Amino acid sequence: MKTPNYHDFYQKALIPIGVNDQIALQESSAYYANSPSTHWLIAVEGVQLPQTKIYFHWKVSIYPADCEGDFDWKKPYYCSPNMELIDHANAFASSLVTAGKSDKLSSATLLEKIS
Image (cartoon, rainbow, N blue to C red; front, side, top):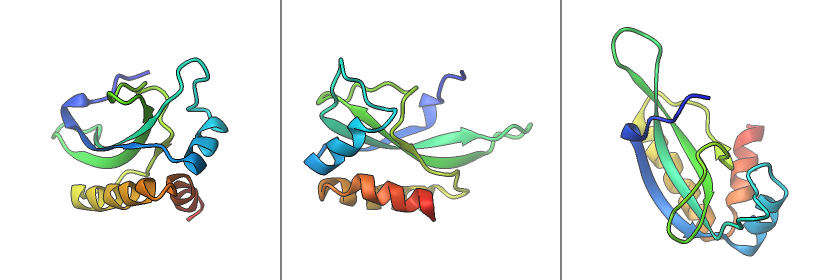
């Protein structure tokens, strides 16, 4: 598995996981029973395209984390499709931050997966 590009990893928010989102997390493959997560880490990540000139697309990722922001990059709760513009990724990440603060992050990502 390729190590993520942390040079182009921009943490947007570390927010507490609400009760509804905690239930959804426990039902997902990103859940660790031995290391329960208390926060969501929402980030915009650069995805380098395979070409000679360095060019990036961007994705928004959500990781379960502890209160200090420690997370496992191999187990994201959600990753968006790649976006050409970082502005679009930042706007989407902001909408996920708002959903997370309202304990509706799990339903927001479910709607995104269905669309």
